[in-house]
Image 1 (cartoon, rainbow, N blue to C red):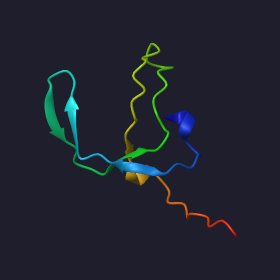
Image 2 (tube, rainbow, N blue to C red):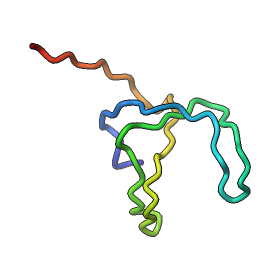
Image 3 (cartoon, rainbow, N blue to C red):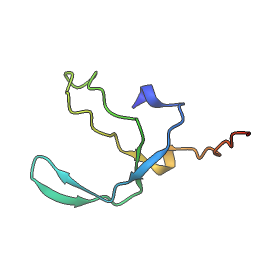
Length: 72
C-alpha cells in the first residue's frame, strides 16, 4: 500500500462484507472500508502473487480531494 500513498485515486466502492478464504465464511467489516480505482496489489511483497486484488483502505486514512473542472 505504501507505493500508493500520496497519490490521488477515485473511490471505486465500499466493502461491507468479505469472504474469509481460510474458512469460506462471510464476514461483516465493522468500520468503513474503501477500495480505490486502479489501486491493486502487484504481489511484489507476497511472492509475486498474480491475483491483483484491491487493497482495503480505511476511510480515515484517506483525504478528500476536490474534483477539478476542466475549462472549455
